[in-house]
Length: 386
Ligand SMILES: Cc1cc2nc3c(=O)[nH]c(=O)nc-3n(C[C@H](O)[C@H](O)[C@H](O)COP(=O)(O)OP(=O)(O)OC[C@H]3O[C@@H](n4cnc5c(N)ncnc54)[C@H](O)[C@@H]3O)c2cc1C
Image 1 (spheres, rainbow, N blue to C red):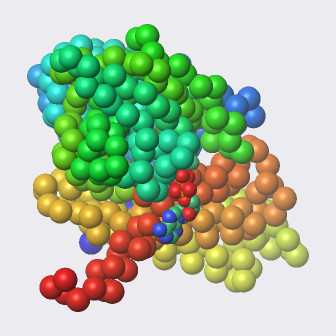
Image 2 (cartoon, rainbow, N blue to C red):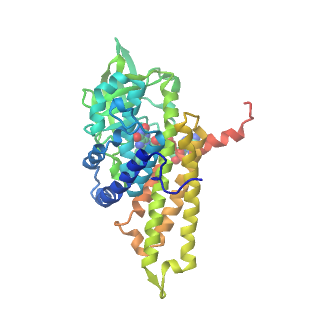
Image 3 (cartoon, helix red, strand yellow):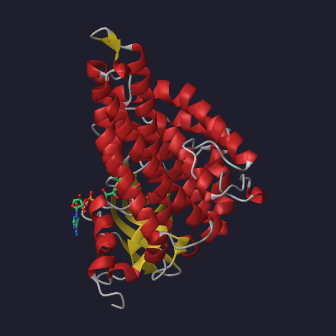
């Protein structure tokens, strides 16, 4: 039996953190998010307030200054924060991810960068996508050429979360043009070094708190020990890590629908038409039930994928199902729940517009809905022993 409260947790330390997150989401993120979108703002100061609470080290071992909590707590943290603002939650988790990957795959680089990542002094990104290659990751054209002991990187990255300001970046590059995934390696790119040129932050139609942007590498020199994942491993690792990302993005969709459901319900208890509260009109109430049912189903898929990741089990299909289902649920229900509030639902003081944009972003990041459906379909389209 899964509870519908993402902050309810059997581990008291995890529950305390998640209750603190709910308070931060309600008190800090939700009111500020209204201005972030109006002013096209990527609010680094609020990310640093979150860093003070220790969240950037949530999954790291205590000897690395972390809290030693499992993936599922990170996923629930993003769910709670996304209820207030999807972009803020996704920005935060992208910096968290790099600290975790450096500790796991390149401890010598963690020694160098972790102190700044834990305080939010420096922000981080994972950069796969390029102007010419998104879903087709194997087609990236950023190159890494051997130069003595090290590497020289050339190329451009686009649509990267936090890249409006981040300068600790795990960037993927091709070491053997024409070899697709087999030649791709991952490098730690330091945005304060020569050869790194940041592009202007991308103008979105909403959700500027995600800090999405791009950069170019012109003869950027990476030392041999700045290759975090070698060719042959990087592609595999990227696809493996992405199961976690797909799961927490699905959790974030649940957070947005939960918030929309609560706001619409509360409005319906206040607003009267035809001499009754809105909630007393049966036709009005049904949309709440539809969202409630799909939200419970999405959460069950998310909790299942989280549990498998915590247990170190394969979660490819579980994460894909959770993300496709939760994204569609959010795309469908957020506008309907906004409609329940009439004209008020369109006001910038409510999150329906921002959350609708969040659902659209969810359908693209970390594996688009089309590609994930294709992957799931192939299991059935092929012979079992193929
Ligand atoms: C806000 C935002 C943040 C992002 N953050 C990051 C980040 O931090 N790091 C990063 O590396 N990338 C990031 N991305 C990029 C994201 O991963 C890509 O947008 C995504 O992979 C889709 O690639 P594309 O936009 O180039 O679309 P394309 O690859 O050009 O595809 C266009 C459309 O066609 C569909 N399509 C493509 N091929 C097929 C097929 N074989 N069958 C059916 N349909 C297909 C796609 O699903 C998509 O709907 C971000 C994107 C956005 C919008």
